[in-house]
Image (cartoon, rainbow, N blue to C red):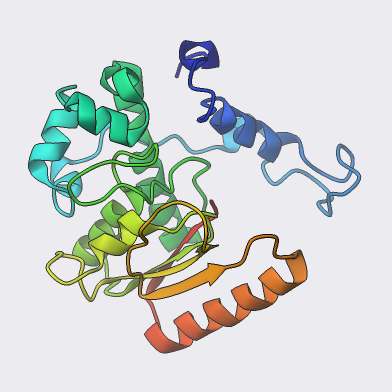
Amino acid sequence: LWSSSSFAHLAIFKMNKFARSAQGLLTTSKATHSESCLPRPLVRDISHFFRPRDDVPREWLSGPIDDDFVDRFLNANLTNDECRYIGFREQTHRPELIRRTVLEVSGTILACQLALKYGIAANVAGGTHHATPTSGAGYTILNDLAVVAHVLTSTCDSQRVLVIDCDVHQGDGTARFSQAGSMLHNKLFTLSLHCASNFPHPKAQSTFDVGLADGMRDDEYMEILCKSVNHALETLDPDFVLYDAG
């Protein structure tokens, strides 16, 4: 959507990571990286990527998310304090970032529609799990996971949606969408595996929270991950699972 130099001063949040992720899907294999176990790239040709629609029906956004917040964000009217808390500061008002944020949500909706048809699909962006029903936070503005849970439970046969969140930071925003008082209560459930000492502070209450110690090795992490996922699946028996890779 724009060159990474447009946001060069945002050293913490690398805008070019989205293009680099797509490039990695096109090129990574045993032939290009010796440690890869892939005989060929996961995506064979750039034409095999799906393109999301440029807009999202307003009722899908304003269902789980506060309508006033959505309106003020889309019209570049968030306060300076809100923009600072999100992290993008004055860049939050840029039309390119507003469009990118909507495309992020649209891409996750499309991925879920494709998953319903084919069994599995992925969005290389998204996972905006710090955004809450009334605000953005942590470089996330509109919570695509909550929007998709709303779409799935209101327009499809899915009544129980589980988010498995493996970001190093707790999915605190998504957890708030599942709490009592939210329209997604008893519809959206969350399993968050995160570094216990890391952001955010304080933590929200997920359906299942697994706080992990600093410096954990791969084998121990995978053992905990497998046990946690199996427990969540057996307990909830969800109709649809969203995996936030982090």
